[in-house]
Length: 289
Image (cartoon, rainbow, N blue to C red):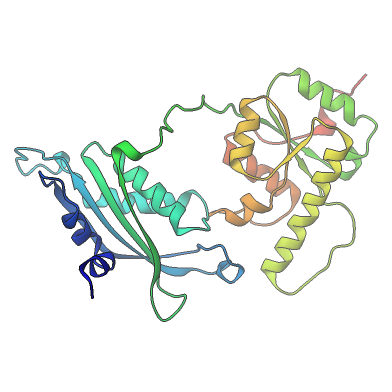
């Protein structure tokens, strides 16, 4: 096997050695760290966990005299903590996304200079399927303080009756006049929904029914913009916009999803996720003139 091919399939530690600068750096490594996690873009990967293997090598700056003090080194648990923290943020579709995020978290450590990360799925076939990336501190995107802090929005619940009420526009006028971001959580459409014996399929059906209501509401007032991701909600909050939440993506991707798809439960869960106050029924606002 040609050396370059052999190197491509070698452990990241050997790859680090082969591409070392003229003045080699110290290295720490994590080998064959296996975690059970739900991840993947394909439908058969949803609703089940699979084994994912992490191999990480971090090149670190020389620390001089350590005096056998653990506080002066990049500890191994900082790597495993970085993996656990990123897996806890949200359900991910791509190993590439996970690798980028773990690398960014590891390279945020002051001792870290360069990071090799290989992540492999172990249960999708007879072999391991994975990705490997190499990142340095100077290749990380500038994300810190790129945006101001996201203000906590007001979360409102709307029944079907509220959505069709003649008071809808005055209610929205009142929310808009407050000058703070708002998120509207809708109720089920009231239309007949299929009932199936598979829990995951039923959850998708119920969530899609809520999204039908969201789009109906958006059609009634142009200020109501349907959004389905945390990134979009944060952006709309920074701009002081009114959003209508389409819950499917956030609920299905959550590592700690709401217990059920009751609209009130979903609204409370969203408020907690966003650090907002408890949801308010829009009909409880001061009656419009």
